[in-house]
Image (cartoon, rainbow, N blue to C red; front, top):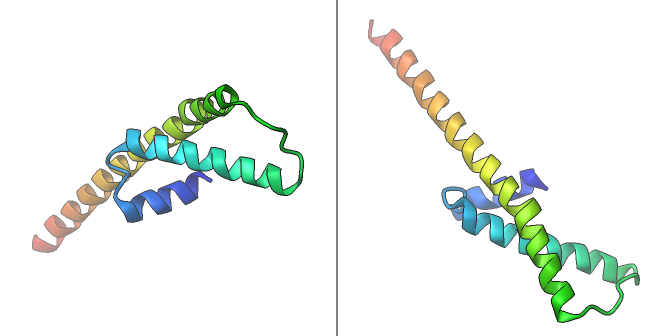
Length: 94
């Protein structure tokens, strides 16, 4: 699922705003999980407070950590790739 987030966020340019990406991703994951459970027929009626609790926990404990980690990782990879390109250019110039 984290790979899917990274792909989608990269296409939508949300990876730079990891908070927004994490909130959206947490909501998407919650909706998909509930849809899969409903398809199996195991979803019980839910109250409004239970739905809010579920959304909040998915956003806080899944969406935000995944988005934060991938935004930090992508920045680190981009910086290391930039440094490597600079070294290659400097080597070619010499």
